[in-house]
Amino acid sequence: MPVAAPFTDPAPGRVLIVDDSAVARAVLARIIDGSDRLRVVGSVPTATGALAFLRDACVDLIVLDIHMPGIDGLTALPDLLAAGRGARVLIVSSVARDGAAGTVRALALGAADTLVKPAPGQRLRGFEAGFIEKLERLLAPRERPAAAPVSPPPAAPIAFAPGPDAFDVIAIGASTGGIHALSHLLRALPASMAVPILVTQHLPPSFMPYFAAQLAILADRPCDVATDRMRLRPGRIVVAAGDAHMRCVSVGDGMGAIRLTTEAAPCGCMPSVDPMFDSVAETFGARALGVVLSGMGRDGVEGARRLTAAGGCIVAQDEASSVVWGMPGAVTAAGLTTALLNPRAIGELIASRRRPL
Image (cartoon, helix red, strand yellow):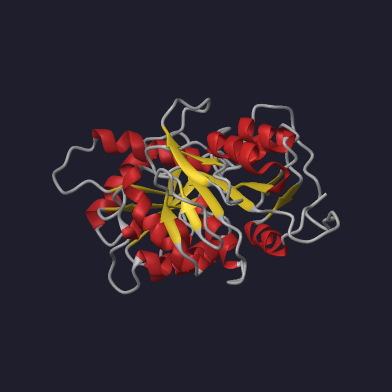
């Protein structure tokens, strides 16, 4: 069984490579060891070997291939996450392409990010820079907002405003780590819950059909990619198209409709959470619940400010359960969150249709 390499400097991130190709493992190890912030402490050809390694060693990052003999990477991913005790997983595979069903599934299962492995003979220069950038970003314990340190409110107990059915729409914004968080949130929703759900997730356009299909399975409810003038329907999920912002407008039936726009957003993202929150505030006001899940940056802060000013409510994912606490941390630092909860607890809150105080 592989043995973790000894080291005394606690600064470098400890990386485990899991890939059935000896050549790939050697190339990845050479690239990683060229970084001052990273160090390879294990290299194994199978998922079984990785689980055995993790019984005796602690790592910060796991680089995981998908196609391997025996247990494939996607099948092993939940067990590796559990055995890794907080280690973040970067999928590096030839099939981890934008829009690929396996890529979306990996993110939904808990992978922090994905990267396409170069084909044999392909130049490595571009790959090396992207590979190290992703690993070093995931190595950061948490991305914190630039504002002053926050004292998060307690996760429980939560006080509720009196009266049921507090929300007519749920608007969810997410980025890095958000798909995994969404999967836990959506599984907590009962089939009987008929509130429309809007989701803006930072993903390229080619991901969106697979992403919507994955959410439909996870939530056991219909999920559509947003199109212009699409009506909101009870119990359905609508995800933002990857090449346009998703806005909500009133059409007089009490439910609203989608309008797609492409103007520059303050955060620079496309799609952006800010226009979604801003338009939901205008259309639904105090009858809207905004949710900010794991993600890098500050997208959602300005829209959340508008939503809370209109009487709506913002709930954010807590730091402990976030892959990156940038977006939820930013809305929390701005004083806009009513509660900080893990994704399943957010789902249970949504299912209750009650407003936290």
